[in-house]
Length: 128
Figure (tube, rainbow, N blue to C red):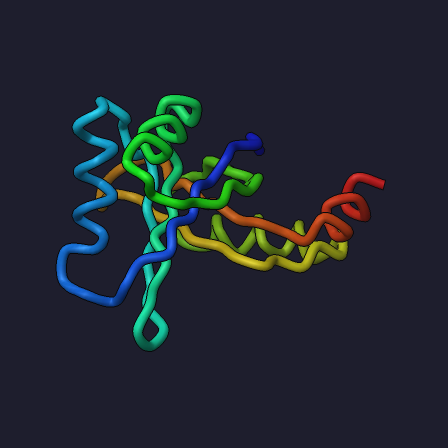
Protein backbone atom coordinates (compact mmCIF):
# COMPACT_ATOMS: atom_id res chain seq x y z
CA UNK A 1 0.00 0.00 0.00
CA UNK A 2 1.22 3.42 -0.89
CA UNK A 3 0.24 6.63 0.84
CA UNK A 4 -0.78 9.44 -1.46
CA UNK A 5 -2.64 12.74 -1.36
CA UNK A 6 -6.14 13.32 -2.65
CA UNK A 7 -7.45 16.77 -3.48
CA UNK A 8 -11.20 17.38 -3.09
CA UNK A 9 -12.96 20.32 -4.71
CA UNK A 10 -16.54 21.38 -4.01
CA UNK A 11 -18.42 22.36 -7.15
CA UNK A 12 -21.87 23.52 -8.14
CA UNK A 13 -24.05 20.81 -9.69
CA UNK A 14 -24.01 22.21 -13.22
CA UNK A 15 -22.74 21.18 -16.65
CA UNK A 16 -19.00 21.70 -17.04
CA UNK A 17 -18.12 21.85 -13.35
CA UNK A 18 -15.81 18.82 -13.46
CA UNK A 19 -14.51 19.87 -16.89
CA UNK A 20 -13.31 23.18 -15.43
CA UNK A 21 -11.26 21.38 -12.79
CA UNK A 22 -9.65 18.88 -15.14
CA UNK A 23 -9.03 21.53 -17.81
CA UNK A 24 -7.31 23.79 -15.26
CA UNK A 25 -5.05 20.96 -14.13
CA UNK A 26 -4.42 19.73 -17.67
CA UNK A 27 -3.44 23.20 -18.88
CA UNK A 28 -0.79 23.23 -16.14
CA UNK A 29 0.49 19.82 -17.31
CA UNK A 30 -0.76 18.11 -14.14
CA UNK A 31 -1.63 14.50 -14.96
CA UNK A 32 -4.72 13.13 -13.20
CA UNK A 33 -4.09 9.56 -12.06
CA UNK A 34 -7.52 9.00 -10.50
CA UNK A 35 -10.78 10.93 -10.35
CA UNK A 36 -14.05 10.38 -8.54
CA UNK A 37 -16.97 12.78 -8.54
CA UNK A 38 -20.51 12.82 -7.20
CA UNK A 39 -23.36 15.24 -6.57
CA UNK A 40 -25.76 15.67 -3.72
CA UNK A 41 -28.47 18.16 -4.54
CA UNK A 42 -27.20 21.53 -5.74
CA UNK A 43 -23.50 20.80 -5.12
CA UNK A 44 -20.96 18.11 -5.69
CA UNK A 45 -17.40 17.04 -5.06
CA UNK A 46 -14.59 16.26 -7.48
CA UNK A 47 -11.66 14.34 -6.00
CA UNK A 48 -8.39 13.80 -7.82
CA UNK A 49 -5.09 12.07 -7.31
CA UNK A 50 -2.42 13.65 -9.46
CA UNK A 51 1.16 12.97 -10.47
CA UNK A 52 2.42 16.23 -8.88
CA UNK A 53 0.39 17.39 -5.87
CA UNK A 54 2.56 20.48 -5.31
CA UNK A 55 1.99 21.72 -8.87
CA UNK A 56 -1.70 20.85 -8.68
CA UNK A 57 -2.17 22.82 -5.45
CA UNK A 58 -0.35 25.83 -6.88
CA UNK A 59 -2.46 25.63 -10.04
CA UNK A 60 -5.70 25.45 -8.05
CA UNK A 61 -4.54 28.28 -5.77
CA UNK A 62 -3.66 30.47 -8.77
CA UNK A 63 -7.09 29.74 -10.30
CA UNK A 64 -8.74 30.55 -6.95
CA UNK A 65 -10.26 27.09 -6.78
CA UNK A 66 -10.66 25.99 -3.16
CA UNK A 67 -9.76 22.41 -2.24
CA UNK A 68 -9.03 20.21 0.73
CA UNK A 69 -6.16 17.76 0.88
CA UNK A 70 -6.40 14.38 2.56
CA UNK A 71 -4.18 11.35 2.91
CA UNK A 72 -5.39 8.17 1.24
CA UNK A 73 -3.97 4.72 0.65
CA UNK A 74 -3.53 3.33 -2.82
CA UNK A 75 -3.09 -0.38 -3.43
CA UNK A 76 -2.36 -2.20 -6.66
CA UNK A 77 -4.16 -5.51 -7.09
CA UNK A 78 -4.32 -8.29 -9.61
CA UNK A 79 -7.15 -7.61 -12.06
CA UNK A 80 -9.06 -10.79 -11.30
CA UNK A 81 -12.27 -11.76 -9.57
CA UNK A 82 -11.97 -11.73 -5.80
CA UNK A 83 -8.76 -9.68 -5.51
CA UNK A 84 -10.52 -6.62 -4.10
CA UNK A 85 -12.60 -8.76 -1.72
CA UNK A 86 -9.42 -10.39 -0.38
CA UNK A 87 -7.84 -7.00 0.30
CA UNK A 88 -10.97 -5.64 1.97
CA UNK A 89 -11.26 -8.80 4.09
CA UNK A 90 -7.65 -8.29 5.26
CA UNK A 91 -8.41 -4.70 6.26
CA UNK A 92 -11.61 -5.73 8.04
CA UNK A 93 -9.74 -8.45 9.95
CA UNK A 94 -7.44 -5.71 11.30
CA UNK A 95 -10.49 -3.70 12.40
CA UNK A 96 -10.07 -1.05 9.70
CA UNK A 97 -13.30 0.74 8.84
CA UNK A 98 -13.21 2.46 5.45
CA UNK A 99 -14.55 5.99 5.11
CA UNK A 100 -14.24 5.99 1.32
CA UNK A 101 -13.13 3.67 -1.47
CA UNK A 102 -12.99 3.65 -5.25
CA UNK A 103 -11.27 1.26 -7.62
CA UNK A 104 -10.71 0.78 -11.31
CA UNK A 105 -9.08 -1.46 -13.88
CA UNK A 106 -9.10 -1.69 -17.64
CA UNK A 107 -10.71 -4.69 -19.28
CA UNK A 108 -7.98 -7.16 -20.12
CA UNK A 109 -5.40 -5.28 -18.02
CA UNK A 110 -3.30 -7.21 -15.51
CA UNK A 111 -3.56 -4.70 -12.64
CA UNK A 112 -6.31 -2.87 -10.80
CA UNK A 113 -5.96 0.04 -8.38
CA UNK A 114 -8.02 0.76 -5.28
CA UNK A 115 -7.91 4.02 -3.35
CA UNK A 116 -9.33 4.19 0.15
CA UNK A 117 -9.36 6.34 3.26
CA UNK A 118 -9.85 5.46 6.89
CA UNK A 119 -10.40 7.59 9.97
CA UNK A 120 -7.17 8.60 11.70
CA UNK A 121 -8.12 6.50 14.74
CA UNK A 122 -8.69 3.44 12.56
CA UNK A 123 -5.36 3.92 10.79
CA UNK A 124 -3.55 3.99 14.13
CA UNK A 125 -5.36 0.86 15.29
CA UNK A 126 -4.46 -1.02 12.12
CA UNK A 127 -0.75 -0.45 12.65
CA UNK A 128 -0.81 -1.21 16.39
